[in-house]
Image (cartoon, rainbow, N blue to C red; front, top):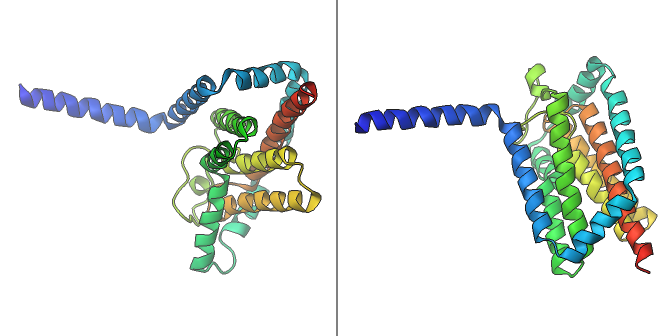
Length: 255
């Protein structure tokens, strides 16, 4: 009886493992959605109302921004794969690549991870900037969810699937390729900080330069095509502008 039970357990475990492996994207979507719902439950009522009313007031503009982003991305997708692959290989394998540069690129690329943005948000919470911090958290999670949905729809393979000469630095990226989540997150964060703190031109250019470099690192480490980066930059910037407009509306209404 024990052997039969053990065999059944092994079969169930094996089937579960296969299911998880084949549905990683759906699992990630579920986890992100649950995280977003949890954050919405934990946010103080006044801040939740703040964002909700802002979204309602800006719904027409929000639809325009989303449509513009979708249109821009669709135009980029229509470009040729050959040029995309050529430029990818130019930045990924050509030239001298010392070990110190690989380590620097891997470290720098993590600035575009959603967890890095959430880390910045926690620091802001500790300094008393509640509304800005929650805006950063909600914006980051909703953007992450949108990126994962787009990846499921477009379903573009990573460069190393098609291009066997791809040089992978720091481990293979999981999931699909279009658009770049790291790039969208870092551009979103840059726009939010520039708008939220009314940064001068030189500081804004500095943040955009960092965001651009993070996008380049995604090609360097072998995770994304150039068009993935371009789409991520457009989507992240549009999402940051949208959340900035919500904040701007309430800054005026509360005066």
